[in-house]
Image (cartoon, rainbow, N blue to C red; front, side):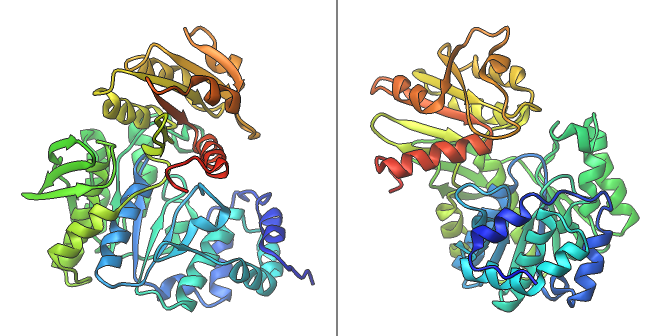
Amino acid sequence: MMKFTNSKQVIDKIEVKKRNGLQLLSLKAFMEEVGNPHLQLKCIHVAGTNGKGSTVNAMNHVLMEAGYKVGTFTSPYLETHHDRIRINDTFISDQAIVDYANTYYEKWVEHDLSMFEIDMFIAAQYFVDQKVDLAIFEVGMGGDRDATNIIFPMISVITNIGLDHMEFLGKTYVEIAEKKAGIIKAHTPLVTMERRQECLDVFANVCKQVDSQMIVCDDPRDVYVDDMLHFTYRDMHFNQQTLAKYQAKNSSLAIEALLQLRQRELVTFSDQDLHQGIRNAIWKGRFEEIQKHPRVIIDGAHNVEGMRALVDSCREYDNIRVLFSALADKPYGEMIDLLMEISDDITVCEFDFPRAATAETIAAGKDVKIIKDYRKAINELMDESHILLVCGSLYFIAEVRDMFLKKGESTLS
């Protein structure tokens, strides 16, 4: 029997484990064998194309403010594999990962579980063992066949539908909506910020079939940014420590979901908890100012809808330089076209990841500069007269963020 002594050994072993094509059958069989820890949790389930992590984070901070012990499961990770699994914003420990691996690794192999399924199990078991009050699970991809879809939540949340992961989820908004609607459970309310009628029709049809209420959020009003974000939702004015206008929608969705839960007496919190939690909800890697002088902002916009939201948040700045990189399967041409609406100074680069696109591929046919090494590019592009916006793949953003933290020049250190 394999014996692990540190979490790196565990992660190296599980990161190579791919989906086995059996959807959730293997995971469900394994969970049944180990006592179904996920069924012992009070859960919230969050799906959608963009804004999932931000919505989870906003709910998490409000519930923490109200005194709850909250587990969160999100992906992909930004700093370390451990940050997918947190309790009250503290990452799971090395020792916990090692202990779970030493107890269950043989069974993971026996059931041919993927990395994401293993992470899902560890999260559920860890939350049970640590006696959390509530757990919020973010869907990895899609919804119906995602590893998180074994839970039975108190409420389901779908942020929006965009064209991403199309090789797995479908070629149209409706096809993708059908996959994401798979998280809707019987007699469990759905809250969404989606606006496309054809997608809302999909959600409404599923809700009707399973006798669940669908709540479509209003848009936030009076949205503006000075040194922080301001917006009004349900006639309540909120402040949030972010410069991203797009977070107003994600936070409004989180607020609506929480108010629905409070109305049903499934959670309790004060209006003060709500305001303070939203104010404190900072989500790393999303319009994050990582250095003040010269000013550098990073954002993990990695699909067309996400990039459009980022560009809209940048329109009030007229001195932006852009450094961009993407995975090979993303619509980088369309994303560059959007970035050209806010900057005529765009550089593309590369980063070390198996699925990353080459700089030449990204730049093809576009009026952009190429500096392959992103470290060199950042050093050349930074100056006091410009804001440097570094954006694209979350894997790229994670590398850049780590570089600034290690340099010790970041506003975060």
